[in-house]
Image (cartoon, helix red, strand yellow):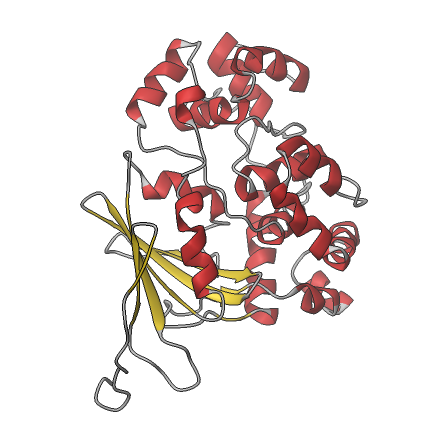
Length: 333
């Protein structure tokens, strides 16, 4: 391959201490990959930081490989792109392909938690303190991309997780486009807003998406540009704008800004399981509702999402008293 498509002489560009060099092997009709190395100023657990971006084990936009690399396929403001990130001796080594490559590399520090501030967090419960100590590599990601978090969050409304993951997988693979560059097999970039808007009703049905959720996504993609603007807002204002779209409520908006903005204080309310998990972990109350959960998280004001994330990572959960939810059971609101 190298002999057939030889690399062209290029120069190295230094930007703010980061080295960005063209690399990879050019392919026909495909720009060469670009690279960036970023020295990490703190411990980082790549799986913990980027894990929330993965929508199930078969997510076409996310893949982990045996060498520890994380691959992401995203639709950026400059076009589709594929990003591969790996940690090597305290350095994040990234490579990207496609029209969105430069944007993804520029966004790398924020995606790995550079704008997060764990120092502002003070644990108030022993369980939270122990988990925080055991997870020094946890930081909150900020992707800077709204629709890629909003659409799968809408798909997760009022259905089981497995149903939502299946819908996301089927729709992205059928209507998205193959990830640029040498991405792992079957990786795809999610559809553009216009493509989402043109998906026939029967295809939503085949993916198991009811009319209410499909209609919410269709309303959202019509104002996608306005929703993407929320990356420049405070989390509360961003949620308020998202919730202007009929069908998007506090649960969906919180799930979106947690990923797109790295919102440390945005609590997921309206969830079927989270209040009981938080209530059980902090007060032994497995029947806690949203009001009780918010009261228990009040000492963490400004960092409530981080506190809830640590509680989930602690593994503390009330014993199951009922069978696993069947498809069609009501989940999140």
